[in-house]
Image 1 (cartoon, one colour):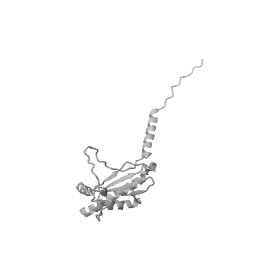
Image 2: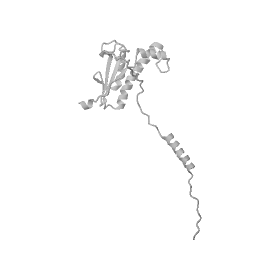
Image 3: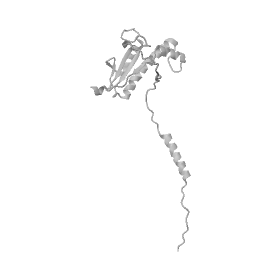
Image 4: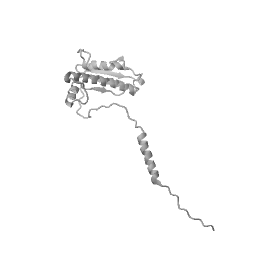
Length: 182
């Protein structure tokens, strides 16, 4: 009989393989981009039983509607999105004391309606114009009261006083499906 020498079993060095796997994992984490959701940062009021749902006079309510065809309707009239900021500022501040605009800035409510088919980008453009209108009004008031522009680094008491005079009030209604009704 032939005498065969028994060879030792082949072993794979797993420690170096674990090192390589760890390095690949680190490389993947470093090179991968994490998708960030774009959205609107809004502080919602706390949900409670003591919330007062008062009546809002129609004079103090500005109705803004965005439909699925990217059309902006303010009080039933179609306007371009670029004009919304000026319309909102005039409604909120009512410098000429017109009867068809808000009584006072602290009484003004902007009601934003949109269709389910409205693209998110269009909705964001409209929301940004409304936010810009409030920002400009806060800035103008800050310049007249304190002689400096409104910004987040202002003392809290000054910011609260400005926000009390011109509160940021946008009421968002549930999306509607006007396209299916027609």
